[in-house]
Image 1 (cartoon, rainbow, N blue to C red):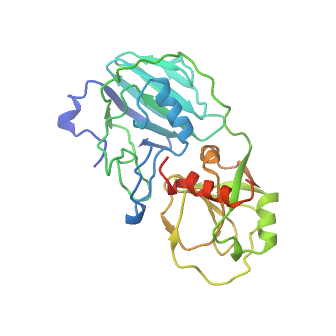
Image 2: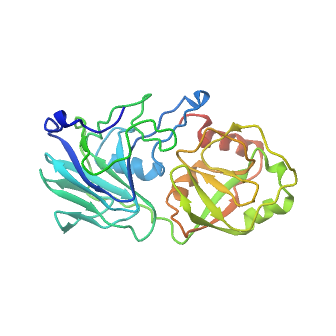
Image 3: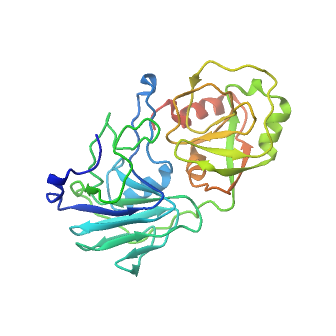
Length: 317
């Protein structure tokens, strides 16, 4: 079920990478395992889907090819065979055998070359795409590591050997491509009222839309715990567990919200005051601890509510 190559097969992997160091967290991710929420299985997949897809486009991989998601840099890999790669997302320093490389560009790693990703000055997650994709074993149709359920390849560790898949028939068409700047010290996220906004006082919604909330160190692929003014309820008690989607802003009894991300649970019992638009989830996924989040209303109307349901995973993209 994992991506690790057993010892007796490691010598047979001629096209791929040896993992030398992983930094705080490195995982294999693709576009996710969709269609299993009724079985209690979340989609998972790349937290910043925009940067992940961009990395695959740069090396001409097919959409959905598996790549590496790297949190706060620190990844070191050695090439097995000549590889074509790209690094996107949080703009980390890139070194190939000690020489400077560039993010958002197509890089060639000669056989035996070492690629190092430093700590990004802004943003949280970088993506390393290898031409041909990472050939980890799929689980329920996806090669994504789900850190909550444990499905998919194990979290990467030094000593892992990752095979690359066959190169696609098409070739990269750009050496370097422009990319939007990563989120800075403050990130603005559009929201719609959540399914349980009536559990909160009118002042709570006003507080959500006018205050800054700070991303705390208690943040991972499951969700970002936020610090800020408490969001007060008008109703007491707790809900039966109900379905959750990416971008749900769930509020525990103490009033400080949690923003659910890629590996969120598929059900939850705390009320959801608002839901972040899926177009803004890549920015949310790049918000590192200490970043201030500001929520603003996306727009009224039933059409917007239907769009929010589509955007946040109730329909497969």
